[in-house]
Amino acid sequence: MSETTKQPAGRLASLFERLKGENRAALIPYITAGDPDAQATVELMHAMVEGGADAIEVGVPFSDPMADGPVIQAAHERALKSGLGLRGVIDLVAEFRKRDSHTPVVLMGYQNPIEAIGVAAFVDKAAAAGVDGVLTVDLPPEEADELSAALGERGMSPIFLLAPTTSAARTREVATKGSGFVYYVSLKGVTGAANLDTDALASQVEGVREACALPVGVGFGIRDAETAGQVGRVADAVIVGSAIVRLIHEQASAAGGMNAQGLEAVRGFLAELRAAVETARH
Image (cartoon, rainbow, N blue to C red; front, side, top):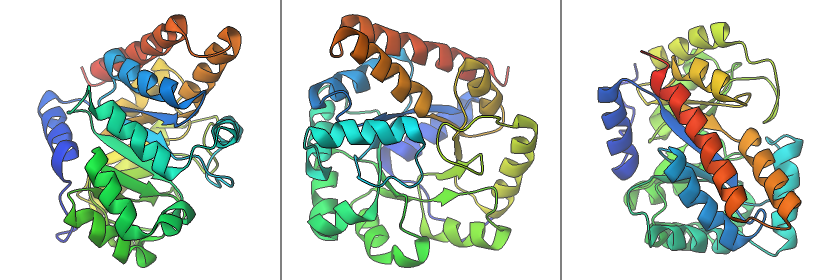
C-alpha cells in the first residue's frame, strides 16, 4: 500500500471507519441535481438516506458530460434547461444540511464550472454548504494540485477515478493525490453500461488495494440489488447512478413531477439495494 496516501477527512472518514467495523460496504447513490427540479433534488436526497444511503453523490449538470451514458446525459440536459448551475447545486447541499448534518455528500462534476467560479470561491462556498468531497471527472491528478490543496485545507476530500486500464504505478500516484476514497470504474465504457463481470471485479479491486490504502468505491454497471450485493462483497462502497436516475425520471414523467409516490419508489429501491449490500458478506 502507498505510505503517502492521505487519510479521508470528516464525515467520510467516520463513515468508512464505522463500516469497516460492521464488515459491510457503503451504499452511495448518485443523483443529478436539478432533475426533475431543484426542490425535488433535496427531497430525493432525504428519501435516499431514509432508504439506506450511507452517502450521496450529487452530479453537477454540465453540457458535455463525457463519462456519463445516455441516461445521465439526458438528466444533465433536463437540469440545465432549468438554469441550474454549480452555485445552485451547492445551495441545494446547504438546504439538505438543514435537516441532515451527518450524511456525507460528494459533488461529481467537471472542471469548467469550477474554473468559471474560481477555485477559492468554489471551495469556500462548498465548505460552507457542508460538502465532504469533490470528484472532478476531467481533472487529472497531475493538474489538480491547486484544487486538491484548497479542498484539503477546508476538510474536504479530492476524489479521483481509476479505470480497469489504470496501471499499478498510476494507481499509486492517484493515491498520493486523493483522499476520502477512490472511485473505481468497473467497466470500459460510460455509466449505465451492462455486463458487469463481478468475478473479474474482485481481482481488479484487490489489485487496487495493493497499490492504494484508500477505501475503494465501485461504480458503473450496478443496476439492481443483485449486482449491488455482488459488488458489496468486494468493494468498500457500492455506487449506483443510472438505475436511480432512470427511476427518478420515470416517476417524475408519469406524475408530471416528483410526488410522494415517486419519493416512495426511490426510497424503496434504495432499501432493496441496502438490504443486498448489508447481507453481501454474511
